[in-house]
Length: 164
Image (cartoon, rainbow, N blue to C red; front, side):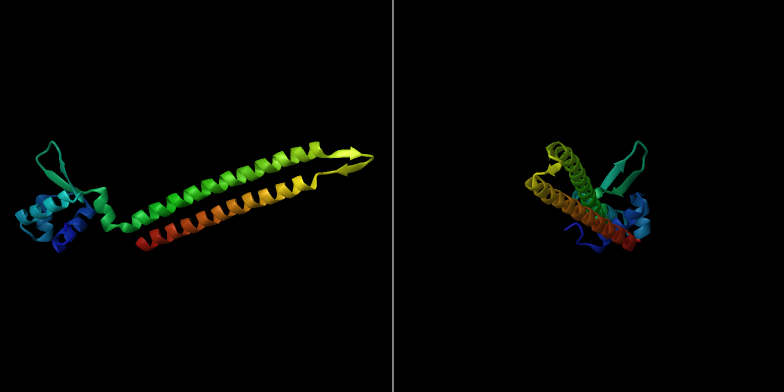
């Protein structure tokens, strides 16, 4: 309802440039002050514009976060992509740390499990098989998370560059 009027959309675009007074908006849009005030009241009611009353005699109007998001929806996409990529990077780092930790633990266990009988070293093949399978899964998961993070970052950069 608040964006049903072309005049209100123009008001939002003007306020996107900078905060303005009623007189400035009236002059910029070639509209009467009562008409601009009526549109501003609707936009304030919708939460798209806020009224900034300073201690001075001037009352400024500016866009709210919600109003900026309506004019620039690509910003929300970029923020979502960047936050998703950060989560993926953290997951990849955690999985790589777990991979390295388990590799160190396995190496320590392998050294203590090797027993020498008459010059022959015997090892437990099942431990080696379990270690290899679980560490491969951790490594593949961390690699997948890192690839997802790279893709999300690339998408965010492309969206940001296309915006300009």
